[in-house]
Length: 199
Length: 394
Image 1 (tube, chains in turn blue, cyan):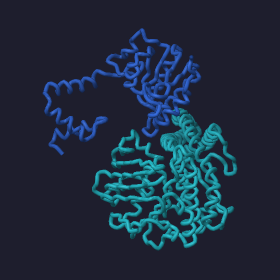
Image 2: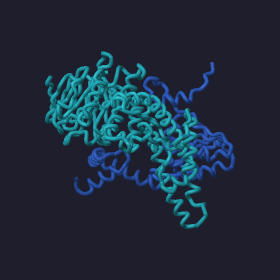
Image 3: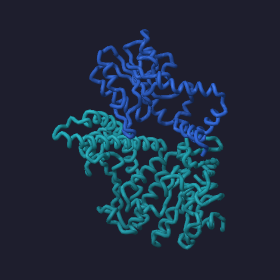
Image 4: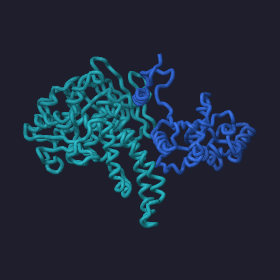
């Protein structure tokens, strides 16, 4: 235990995801030794981010205005909608520069153990967006784990009566990898999802 | 397959111990509480990544130590393979094969195959259905390590679904109490569509596990009958039957996964009111039973102590036969047999017959508190185990 405010700082840092007690201690002592202006800047950004950043009224992505950059962009195809769990998934897909449609961020995945059901996710907002018929393809890009798959199945069943094209991201082998290093589940999925090769 | 060396550091009662083993029979003798079973447990851990005695890993680490290391040299068809496991409680365990780290410790499964006979085996016959399901699942994973993944997927779906049933059930009960006769409460509208989704996932994972278990029971049935006959000297007719919680007792089960998936879905639909009422998943492989019977009577409840022991031994011997007969691509020779303190539990006849059955195996490790408990047929290397050290005596 350290005295007073140093221990407070370590406790607060230790609450952050991915930071354990040792890491918290290390960051705390780094901050103690760091230049005061650097620390001030960090503190300002922390306060600012809570004040300024909000979630896009349309898609749920992080935004600085009412709508996020992607929803404001008129060049984005309104007929394709990609559903993801978290804003960081939007960033991951954006990095591919392949996708030109829009997004819908659910804010998590269905997980009864954690008490998260459809009502805790932005599902109702999604249904409202789909209601006008402008979207023709819905891409379900939730994580390829149990909760992500369950969420995708749930959404697919929910929108089925609307008659739009529903797709799910493919699972399979990593590009540039070796077959022998793939685990059995991934390899099994890759077999299931194999496709015809045009030659 | 042969276990050539075993070396433990900070495992259970051992600060450090080295043990070199030959093919054939090795007998470890020592008074109770000296660490014989700890050696067997370490070998079992390398084969299954779990203990046969405890569910968590913390007790496996010597008091005061921060980690334990189990190192084995496995001889597969003349090739030595060094398998090293580091157990870190509260952290992630590490595994290395021939000094190369494995990305996932789970890949160690299948490198060393063992069949363990232990005093706890009597629970296979007299204990809860969970004991028999565990017997089947452990054998499944030993034969096809991939099924460890199927098993853990199923457990996860089950936990999620049961959590949902608990919350949906309490909501539904609340709604019924509040507005009599009306069933338009939040549970019905909000939770049930997601329950359908979990049903689908449970049925799919469950069907895969169920199909694997059914196939295993088919393969075991003749082997168990034969082994029981041999152990009990022809004293009875031992039978195995798999009873699914998704089907009536006499109803034949579908032979393919699609049929089993549908069977589970139908059974879940029928059980839904009861499941919501009680907040538990009532259908699926986690509620199934492996029924053991002698003649026409169920072994659980009717078998005498001696008959129950014969049945337990027959199950283990059948597992050994099955693993020995498996395909040559994954296995390299017969599994290593571990007999942990079982002879003390048996009468003279069963002792002799069991010894005769296991003596021809490629490698057998026997532990006993008293050397006189070990039958004549199992002559071989002798080791004395005392106070955390092992010494070869003959």
